[in-house]
View 1: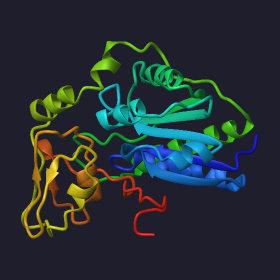
View 2: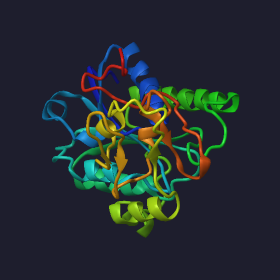
View 3: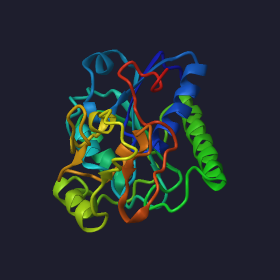
Length: 267
């Protein structure tokens, strides 16, 4: 089956999910489709919902579920009127029913579930070594290959919604910002800026999907109490100035910024 137009909405904290999205994009473009990537947390555009032949959503797995901004964006989906929608998730461990919860939500919104896959990517939490390592690169390559295979399968038609499992109470808890804020404070302590490295550019504040970082020109950014621990702030900092909890080092598979025009950041 040929898609003339595909719109993919992606949430990426440290670049793993964007790497998978770019691999899928390549498959669709090679097949002659126009593809637009957009940041999932900013919501869905009416022109995509009306004009795209196929919608896709991509997001990371975190704490066996996904981040509140992802749930909030999906819950805000307008009526689908039968439009096909595929989804994919990236993870280092297990999802425990995430796919099933997303499928149920997509169906309630009136979309046709068109396929779901979970791709293994390197872990980005509490790392002690600079990344990506040689082993990380191998995992990334395998994850991108799996994403391309999923894209090729989607070209042939509707695919199974794999990895669904049972949507249980865990997925309901995953939608709560209160739970994520509690985890951020109790398990990961707080993020901060290294005053010797930070150039006060404000990029971390501008791209924080939780609106958690306060910044004024010329001053250090300040992390507040709405953190969801996605670590995008560290991944987008051009000077590695974000201090992570417990002596961890930042992980960055790719610059996770997705400009509104869909091009890679800096392109």
